[in-house]
Length: 275
Image 1 (tube, rainbow, N blue to C red):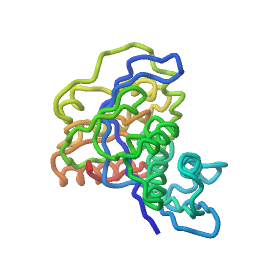
Image 2 (tube, rainbow, N blue to C red):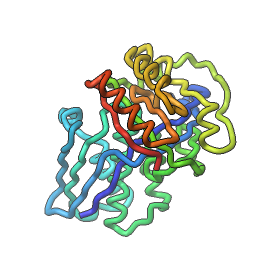
Image 3 (cartoon, rainbow, N blue to C red):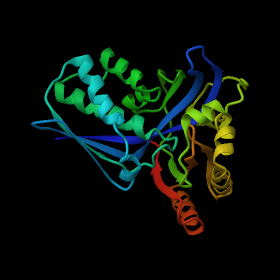
């Protein structure tokens, strides 16, 4: 049995620079990962299998396929059929929530298959497969703080402090395609240079306005996070609707989580830290 973590991805800053001729968007983003997320388990078996467990399993139950099985099929197309495997996806991250759940799951499946067949994670074919599966999958495959450019696939590692993080989602799924379609196509300038926290604090998320128009509950989340004691930075991640707050002190994060849960018991709230 091989067990691979699929940690949540955050965009500490996300600058959308242009819409490209191929339909994608040219962007600059500061990727980071936290210490919690989904888990992908694979076990050699007599025939292929796939099951979903966990608190958010129902959100994927109606899909005809899944990024885990797509990753399996793409891996085999690149490296050969190998042995049948049974996958179990333990789903703890909300679906369609801007924290890379599906991309992280696909990346975890690729890492697990690579380990099973003795393929290095730096293999160019493996990274090319990740890139074809989705713009965030290469970053999730590497799983560390990085600057992403292009569609997000051109990656440069950068050091980041292991700060406490609070993730909050108001229970709203947001379509990434609709959020990008709502971007106003105004280039507000490049992402900064320097150390990761300074880049994040000086940056922005250009997808916040269209996401907030689609899901006004994001306004409520950000308004609550921004006034909590000890918050260094509060922002929406990716295309939403999950928002994050960075803290210096784990006690401040825990107190903030308690306040959020008391005020909004139906919201999803996760205490974690930058990995």
